[in-house]
Amino acid sequence: MNQPVHIISTEILSDNWYTLKKITYQILQKNGSTQTQQREAYDRGNGATILLFNRQRRTVLLTRQFRLPTFINGNPDGMLIEACAGLLDQDNPEDCIRREVEEETGYQVSSVRKLFEAYMSPGSVTEILYFFAAEYNPSMKIHAGGGIAEEQEDIEVLEIGFEQAISMVEDNRIRDGKTIMLLQYALIHNLLG
View 1 (cartoon, rainbow, N blue to C red):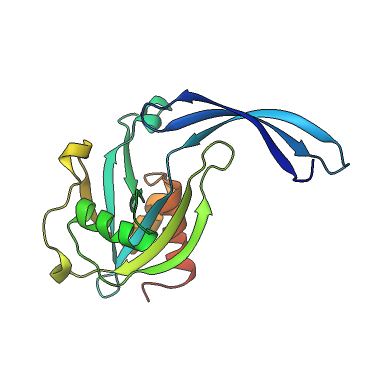
View 2: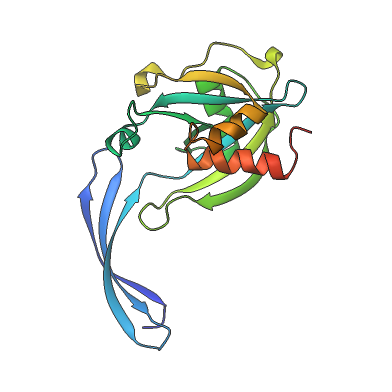
């Protein structure tokens, strides 16, 4: 085996919403031996997320929507407060996040800044997430937002004080990983001044 990983077989377990695969592979161990392993990997595509902030008002725009996986894992109403985000589909990350901001929040931002990228659940999900930040102001609002009905989105747009958002992380009202990462980035790098 010349490569550290050799795929032996891939079986599609589900191709209903996204693709769940069972993969059998050999992997080179530190001691030089090879080991055969099996894992399941969920491929939902890559995504982008953004922290929308207003320096003068010291606010952030977040969304609130129902997330079934949180509901079945004990979140009583299944509602989650999150930073705006979406799947890339065929777009590059910057175009994707501009589109998602407009669809979800109703704001049209022109200047976005890439902060970093991260695998969010690398033990089982293939997705890499691109993180952005952009300033917003009321003049950028072009419609009410709320998502796309054909995609079964019913999104509430929230404008929250930055300090309140940080306290919402601390008391578990905000429990979404990408949102926590963006808020902590803003705090560490003093994005809101």
